[in-house]
Image 1 (cartoon, rainbow, N blue to C red):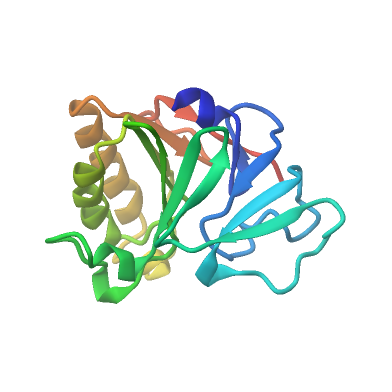
Image 2 (image 1 turned 45 degrees about the vertical axis):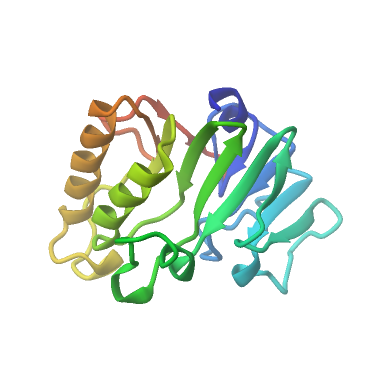
Amino acid sequence: MKKFLKSIQLDRWTSGGLNNTGVVSHCHEDHDPTVQKCIFVPKVIFVHDFHYKNVKNPTRTSVRSVDPRRGRRIKGNVYGYPFLARDLKRAPDIEAPDGYLHAAWWVFRKGSRTAVFIGELDAPEVEVMLKFVEKIKPEIVVLPSYGEMKDGVHRTQYPEELAEKIEKAAGELKKKGIEVWAHPITPEWADEVAQRLC
């Protein structure tokens, strides 16, 4: 899965240089590569519920949407399945806080091998993410990395809350033998970092 993750663009980040395929977790401008002329890949794959009406440069990219219930081939023999809040309800004991996820959680599968990409998280979602990963059993999880933020942003209660929660979660995942990647800043807990393209 490492080779696959290095061969695609995740939101606006990459750990393997320019690629020909990208996936997008949600439509916020700081993640969406189709805004502000930030398209480097010919094919960008969005989640069905976050389908875009205004692609800024349609001559350079082919936007495709994915129904989370069916998934789709992303590249080669790897299939992608984006999970939204409603999709988590199918798993016992896993429910999104307040029925909401900040972004879709992408699960990539190739045979029995699995990776998870999470483009953005709110503070109450971190514990749910750990339960989700426990069920999926991936070999790699790509998590957002944060510094301090204003109170209330990402449903935080204090500026360092989300950074602390994700660092602790990364430590728990690594104890279970899961490789943890980060984006967009380089934290000490990351095994690999995806760099921002634009």
